[in-house]
Image 1: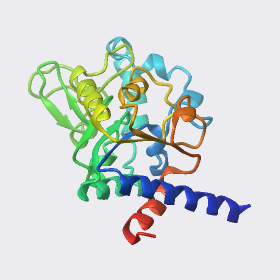
Image 2 (image 1 turned 180 degrees about the horizontal axis):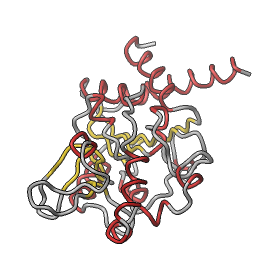
Image 3 (image 1 turned 135 degrees about the horizontal axis):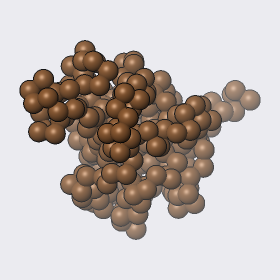
Length: 253
């Protein structure tokens, strides 16, 4: 059984590497599954945040943050600020492919900053970043600065409460980021989707802007609504897939 799975993964990784080589460039669109291998919890799996905290979607809203600041920040700090995840093989491979001129953009639904930590520069963060916080007067603060503040952080410059620079439930996505993502997807000859169930809208709908002639790859542990349209579908751990693909890409085998 182990040999069969391993063989399938290697064959899939070889096919992925061949598609990357053949394309002038590609765009990567990623979700929570990209970071779970770094220990970051996702939302919808059987071990996800919703399973352990069914009220998460209510708590991660601006209205809840304003009405119940202590409860919001207790939850937020435990969820996003209690540990320091490191980039995994997928993040590292994508950064390397960008440095080689193959990857044009990473479009991510994650807020953990791991793509930048791995070295990626052209990152479009659809849901913002948990690495930055701001007050009502737009004074900015880093994650480390806020960690050192009291439970409910207050701006030392103006006295107004801080909030994370992420898109909370009830809030729209940033229109500039949406426009950049659409342009990137519409212009790429190869779109690779990874670690996402393609069930979170409007982000998931952005992939429909790709060209009809563009190749389309899905890498996810479970099925997605877009699998039937893909040129290649891989149901394997995304870090292992990209690690194996990079070996094929670099050696030419």
